[in-house]
Image: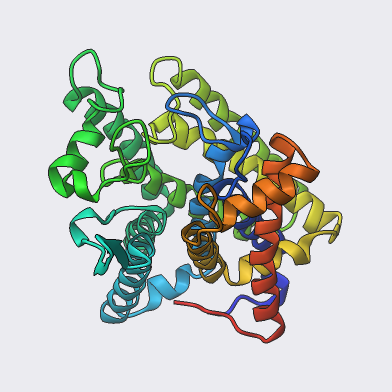
Length: 376
C-alpha cells in the first residue's frame, strides 16, 4: 500500500537521514588528532553520542515497517517469505562483501585473493539484515501487544544469558562474556572483528538478539504515530514514553551496565527512550510548526540510505589503501596536511569527517536529481 501524501511524516524521513549523516560522521574521523570524545564510541561501558547512531538507524528501520505493515500482513505466505528472505540475503551479502573489499592483497610481491578465512562475517549491514528479518516475521505473525511482550522477554532473556553463560565473576568482560564465547564457537577467531583490544565483534551473533528490540520499538512507535496522527497528544505521549523508558534503563544500568559493544538490555532501552524523544521533537518542529530548514539536506540521505552508506565505507577504505608517502595514505594526507593545518586538534578531525560526509551527500543529491532511488 502506498502511503498517501497526507499520511506521510516528513519528520520520519528526516530522522532516517539524520542517522545516516551521523553514522558517516562517526565512522570517518580525521587523523592527526583525537576526535571529540562524544563522537567516539565508549571503550566498553558507558555511553556517548556516537553510541546512539546505530540503534537509531535500527529504530528507523522499524518505523519504515509500520508504514508497510499491510503489505507484510496481506501478502501471501509465499510472497512474504520470498521478499523478506531476498532482502535479508542481499543486505547481508553486501555487508560481507564490503568487509572483504578490495578482495585482493599483495603477498611477497604477488597479487592474491584475500583469504575468506580472515574475512569478517558479521557487521553493521549484516546486523541490519538479521534485525529486519526477525522484525518482519514478528510484524507479519504477531499483534502489537504480543510484540511488546516479546521485546520485554528478549531483553530479560539476554540479561539471563550473559550472566548465566559468561565466566563466573567476569560475565561482562570483553574476553569472557557469553556473546564473545558464542561468536568464537560459531564463527572462529578469523571471522571476528580484530581492531579492538582483542578480537571481539561488536556486531556479533548473540548480541544481535537485543538489537532486534530497537527495530520492534521503532515499529511500535510508528504504529502509534499512524494511529494518533500529527497532534500534540502524539508528541506528549511519545515524550512521556521516552522519559519512562530512559529512566527505567538508567535504573537497570545500576546492576546491568550500559555497553554498546555488548548491546546490553539497558543500552537498548536507553537508546529507544532517546529515539522516542527525538522523534517527538521532530514531529513538533517539522509537522506542527512546519519548520523545513535542513529537512531537504537530511532527506537526501534518507532516500538512498543503503547506497550512500556503502559508498561512504568503500570510498573510505579505498582512500586508506592509496599511499601518498611513506607515512601517510590519501585519507591521512588530506586530514593532516590540509584540515589539521587549518583547524588544529579535534576540530580538524571533526572537519575532515564533516567534509567526507558532505562528499557522500553529493552522491545522494545527484541521485535524487536524477530520480535514481535504489530499493531492495
